[in-house]
Image 1: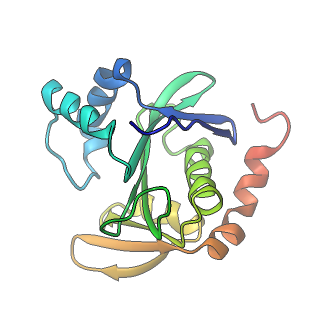
Image 2: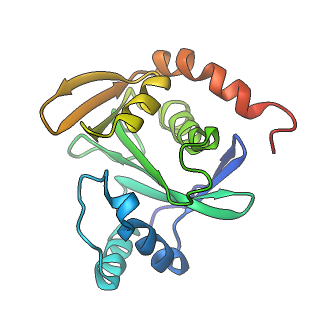
Length: 187
């Protein structure tokens, strides 16, 4: 079992997904508004969700967090290694992802907070060399969101866009967002 990792900052907390969260997370994941832009759009059964969680407990290549804002669960974030044989202890390439399930915070500046925490953790804590993600080509909102964080497009086909983020591009691009979310009185 991997050691728990809790991250806090930018007004949010990321804590490991727990067994008691599974049904809520499954319902979020199965919601058509959430599933619409996911690479895998199948409906997840309770048994599939439980099996996923059981595998996750001993997988050193990925971590899934519940996103909390003012102790209220609003979504899920994850990171996983990309290169075969690498673990999160010494990753070169990491794939982050998240979804905001709570409609009150989707499309809001607060949606950047969990990504900032994950990216800081990946670059500063894990010393990853690069983050990469695959986004559906039609998900213009996600592409714009990631561009604001410094991601660059590295490959595109009809359906998918692969994007990459280097530490320096992230530091420069994220500085204004971090400053805004870190201002006193933003709670």
